Length: 299
Image (cartoon, rainbow, N blue to C red; front, side):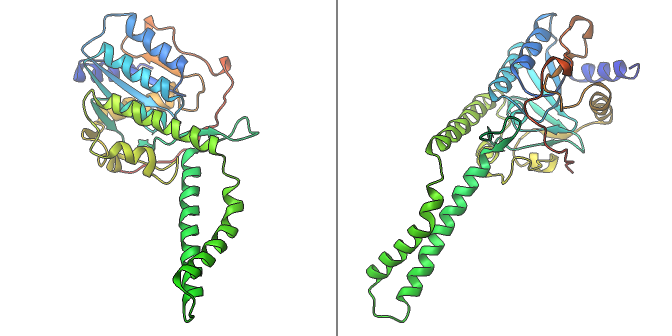
């Protein structure tokens, strides 16, 4: 741990900032810990947040970002490794992003509980992609039958269309019957939560590029899709690689202090650790959501 203090001091001096580390689920408990870190001493001008998370509660992500921006003029967020889902929502509120060579963000798609499964969750993108595939297959089937019935016959286009329509409906209506409109409404509301929070957080420094929020919410094909530093530069205006001392601090925190698998997050102001009894152990709460497999980004 003797290596930690000089690295923290170097980053703090460079950015005139308090240096925070947050590892674990984005949760209300994490928000409370961040709030206590902010109010137990006189803050410096800026904040540097090292963030490692697989995601969590979007409402907590919004409140964490708002709390930090309330107490600090600028917020620089460092991504040493994984920062997924609600973690990506949180970084929209940052002044700048510093992403290490192995750092990665993820899409803002919604995670939903699977029916009759306590520990498993599915992506809202799965259902939306299924609807898209069904729509394309239904249209393709209709056109195929229309051309097959009409081609080389004296049947009118209207009659051929009616026959093709009945064939397509008969084939796909049993599939559509399994779609729960209430679940679709739930997904739509959750998507709008991410979108509305993202818009509000972007008002601080307008770090998102035009159309980036739409891409993050709905246009990536999978929840675990890797958004590395190169990809992040297509979404955010202010993104850079970590400098050697920042990279070293991020690796130290990730490997020696805490990792993102924690359901009860580790939260600390590294520039003033003595004042913060806010670090929780894994034994305090049972993990509800299994983390995704780790994937490495490239830049």
